Amino acid sequence: MNDIFSAQRFWWLMRKVMVERTSQILGSMVLCLVVTFIVYALTQLLQGVEVGQNAGFEVGLVLGGPLVASIVFGYFNTSASGASFLMLPASAFEKWLSGILIVGVLYFGIFLAFFRLIDMAFVANYYRGFDKALPHVKERMEAVRELAYNGVVGRGTFLMYFNFTGMLMLGALYFNKAAFVKTALIICSLIVCSFVLNYVVVSALIKDTQVAFPFNIVWVWVGNQRAPVVLPENISEKITFIFRYVLPVMLWSLTLLRLKEKEF
Amino acid sequence: MIRVEKFTFGYKKGKPLYRELDFTLGSGKIYGLLGKNGAGKSTLLKNLIGLLYPTSGSITVNGFRPRDRKPSFLRTVYFIPEEVYVPSLTIEGYVRLFAPFYPSFNREMLNSYLHKLDVQTEEKLTKLSFGQQKKFIIAFALACNTGVLIMDEPTNGLDIPSKKKFRKLIASIMNDSRTILISTHQTRDLENLIDQVIIVDDGELLVNTPVGAIGEKLSLQLVETDEPELAVLYEEEAVRGRLVMVKNENGKEGKISLEQLFNATVENPSALKSIFAN
Image 1 (tube, helix red, strand yellow):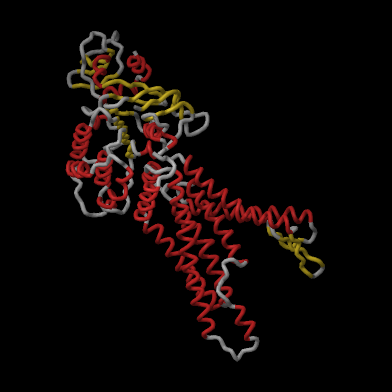
Image 2 (cartoon, chains in turn red, yellow):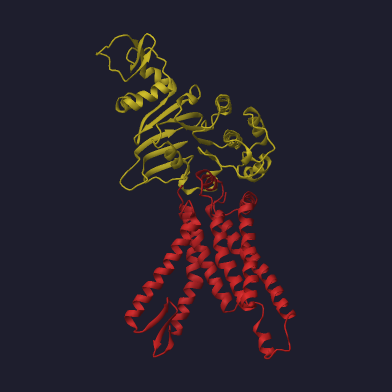
């Protein structure tokens, strides 16, 4: 008997997870999609389609993804459901993979398809009401396009999505109760600490620092003007690589290790 | 077979709850694990099934190391925790989703056990009372036909008729290939059911003996006045005096209830440990 992966056993597990936790998993997904739609709709009304699509995309992935991620391993709120999950005759790898598929494939795929649809609708709506008599028609028309998933916003959001979902899945396995809140607090604390520490260190090194973004850019005052101090390109690329690939892989792999070693 | 060797466990470093425990539980027997509240019964059970890991020492269950939680191990054990979990599914739905994981699951047996325990419903399991939910899980666990069945306080939440049905059912499904371990602090629930009694207290295994051997080692005597020459292990008020428990040295087999044994062990742990160690 294969104790690591069996296709049949994995099918039983996926079926069980999806049927048993339909309301939690699908409910949280639907909630995230609805919130995305509302944020996009309201923001584009107030600040235009471009701002709206960025806000909707970021909210749906960066906030929605972690919410779904904390739910897929949210068995440990009660001792009974936690024991039932760990004692189910499926391997730790299969249990982990079921969560990964829901967060990394199912929600991710559904969200991208849903976002593309609403994005197309809002952009089409923008063009329908477009006044061609206004000046700079060409520039204004070109300014509004469907969000490119491989653009700056798309790539930045994917980076945050895979890192934050990894952290939330890990948090759901570390904290038995209120895992989402506890992990979110830890993430916020880490971000604040890294900003403060970075600012303190940079201020000690560079006079007249205005603001310092960790691993990214430092703005300094030169007379009345602000000037950026950026990382050398090769270091910047390495840091981006770490945040884009190394850290998510580490976090998602740690989730498997934690699940395997989970005591309850 | 469950083999525990030099088992040490503690939730905090330097504060072991169990120290170097050694015991073996064979097949074909029903074991009763007794202990006070907080004695660590659930902790011991969780170590046996791999929900907790020993700090040192080893545990093997039918040749498997529980902490690995391999599917080939998990399909041969069933653990019923004190608080049971049921999803928002009907009995049919539950069986469809959970039963495939247990190759020896038998649907007809489940129907029979449910009937015996008076659990007949088309409603979702979450709508049932706690006692009904627990009886459903007990019936399902028995129908899975796993070699090892471990139950943590299974009678908690059951009404008096259900406790009786539970005892009858457990006795009826026992066979030579099964090991059943039941933990409880309600000793009367296990009376006339278990083959062997295990008593733990303060991190020690004080008693691990067949129920039939209790009367060989201990006896109860009715005394009316204080008898200083008697080494009393435990005493309780009786109608015409006091019942005192002493070491059985006259060879006559006495009748001692599990509750009396348990009380004596808790009051005189070292004496009882040495009596049952020999």
